[in-house]
Image 1: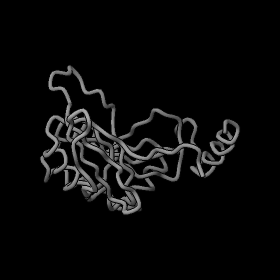
Image 2: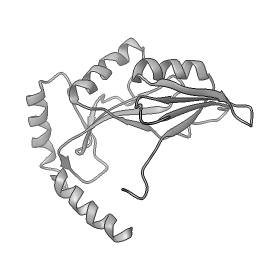
Image 3: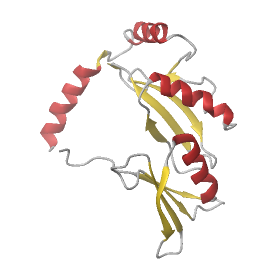
Image 4: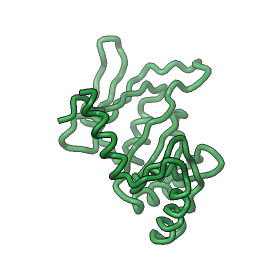
Length: 182
């Protein structure tokens, strides 16, 4: 077992019901519990995994006068390119604009779509690729291509980038490095 792994994320919201509605509708999270904290904040625990009481937590108390959003991004890994495409298409139904002008991106090690949730938190939907390249990296991606054309195009592009290697090779290197610190 890993000595440390990420369990869940909690955010403050100005409009808890609006945020719960969005995360339920768009991501399929269900409310596993809700209540009031000892400090008087409403708190909603949400999950999409019956083995996890909560993966995402929304609590009231977000100040309305903060001059910037303190969350850099919240990233959700999806199970397939088909799911990434499906969720990307559903952004229009939610009337949500993409973050940035390039739309979907390939980071070499992931295909990503970025957007803002109803309170301006940057959200990333991603799938891993079978490669690793040095970061940061971001290349526009055309998700309308067929699976075969998309993967062939991306592989040709990432093979030319600094640090290119198969993901399995990068994972082996990271396993060795992590073993040295644990």
